[in-house]
Length: 454
Image 1: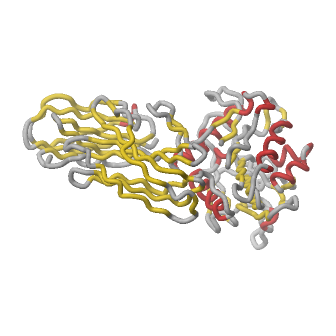
Image 2: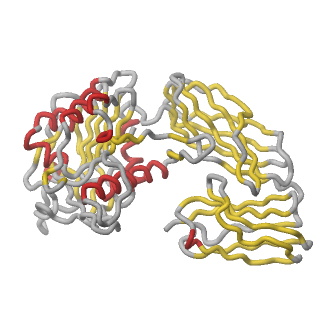
Image 3: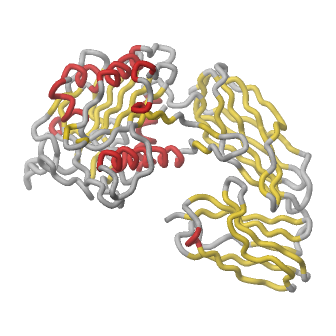
């Protein structure tokens, strides 16, 4: 569960509180996408790996996070309409209720990235800051001095990602504020163990020979108790230059402390053509209460992707903290010249459902008379190209499809003579994401994947 606030489209003229809240959310969601967790309601079978909740648009007393294992918190700017941003009483209470619902068997995980949380809440709600975040206000409250700019500087892993450096960056969003990093002290509430997760690599009071002690350069605190884990980062989500790396460090810590972020952590899902069949296999890093896996398949054509249907079920381990391997599941019901899409449905005993990434497979058979090379360069930022060859004159169509199976561009359609040809791709009208080049000639489909990064 991601708890956010004031979700809306924003522009450079929007209030800074709305800009910060929505760019923070977008950054966190993008980080989850890097990990393979997505929200896509445009698919025929909508994929929802993450619940995203706008807490300000719900009746306050109806908010209940306790049904979730993990809660990621997103907030806005330090101030709203010139007044320091503060949690509502119901927000503070709902977070405490969430942590109180944790058990030995199902530890809760609370993760928050907020540069102002300790600074602002310590004035009137110091007891809550100590109880939940195990922190207290420090002087100064920013490692670059009060209101200082931490853009371009680094934090260093202590309990999280030991000794690794993480850069802090301003966003490119017009009129967004620079990172005013939060500095605070450790103040354990008497439950569990609180450690320094990250420390600021730079502190304005550092001298040429004498550095400020680690206890006075805290960037992140981690607290592990029997029923829950808490990770508090003093830097907003949008200001981490490598959000994927940060999330992996957090998830590794949570798993080391006896919990999981998702009931099934999928390590890999592979669909491999072998002659006139496809072998499907996958592995998981951990499982909690998993019930079964369902392998689904769809056909890909120039009209798009057909409806996914189940082709096999496989019983899950149920609970495991070590790597588990599944398959191969063999799909013999394929034909030469066709392209197929496969995905894995993961079902837990409580009915929770998750999906893997979709894998595409071309059954090329004996189509040696047609060849399609890889797109280069890949990833694509501006222009790229590929080559294709025909041993005979043919009617062909070369198109670009997005990951939803929608045709977004036609590069060539018509009769082509025999020979080898070079084709350019201009990504100006393509948004960042994954795509496929599909060459269709009569009953033959050839496909190559590429990624656009802007």
